[in-house]
Picture (cartoon, rainbow, N blue to C red):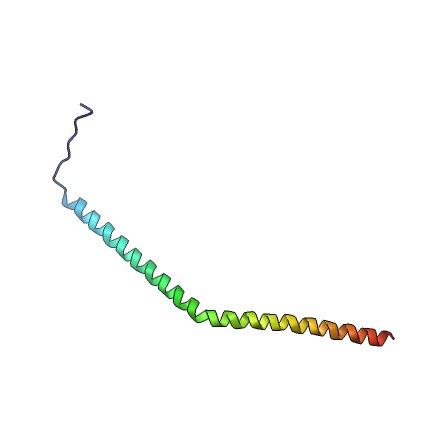
Length: 81
């Protein structure tokens, strides 16, 4: 009958071994993922000051280019007179 089913209480050793291997693999994967995340966080903390300095240098370079453009414009106007 389709409505009558029963669960067998015996589980083979192969099923237990397979479950144990899968659980161990999952734990290893989770451990490695956690280690990678920790390493990336350490790298980010080390690089944060460098990124801030780089942003400042880019801003200074932009200001220098603008200043140079103003100087060149003045020199061109002075040569034109």
